[in-house]
Structure formats: C-alpha cells, structure tokens
Amino acid sequence: QVQLVESGGGLVQAGGSLRVSCTASGSIFSIKSMGWYRQAPGKQRELVARITSGGTTNYADLVKGRFTISRDNAKNTVYLQMNSLKPEDTAVYYCNAQIFVTITTMLNYWGQGTQVTVSS
Image (cartoon, rainbow, N blue to C red):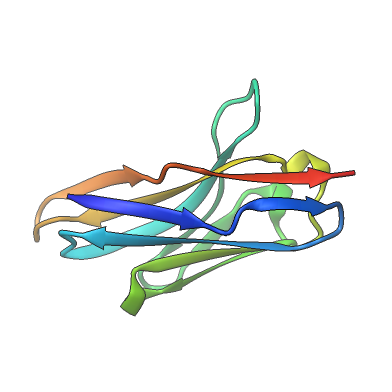
C-alpha cells in the first residue's frame, strides 16, 4: 500500500505565500513523478505543477512565475511554494504521484487534498 500525506494548506491574504508538502510512504520501488493539482468549487481538477524524478518541471500557465515545485527524492516528498497568491488560487490542492510499486508496475496515487483559501 502507498499513501500520500499532504500538509501546509490554510488561509492567506492575497499577495501572501504558502507552502504545501506531500510525502509518499509505503511499498515504493521508485517514484516517476510527483505533482499538484487543484479543484475549485464547480470546476474540474486541473494540473498546477509536476516534477519528474530527474527534476524536469512543468507548470500551468496561470501559476508560472508565482509557484515553484521542488522535490526531495530521499524523503519521497514534493513541495509547492506558492507566492503572490490570488483569490482565484483558492481550491483544494491534491498531491499526485506516479509510483513504481515493483520494477514493472506503475500506479497512480492521489492524496486526500488540502484546502488553500486566499482572501481578497
């Protein structure tokens, strides 16, 4: 079994910063990539940022220049530093990971979500 545990969400004023983190644990052979998605009320879940085991990153256009994703491979942890937050960034943020549980079997996992609320 693999678990993703998120932390660090909360309430912040517009223009402020937050950092969320996600740690994977359990029967992990290796991790291909980790990332963050978000879902606002009434909207579809959307990609925020992803990072591969090699450090390649990609970001949604809406967060480029404001958010930074990073990863500690030794700790199986991914971080999302969010700066210059806007009210439209308000959403539940979900951690996602593509994890090899054996040398040949890769599965997709989701965290439980952490609420980020940006007040105007």
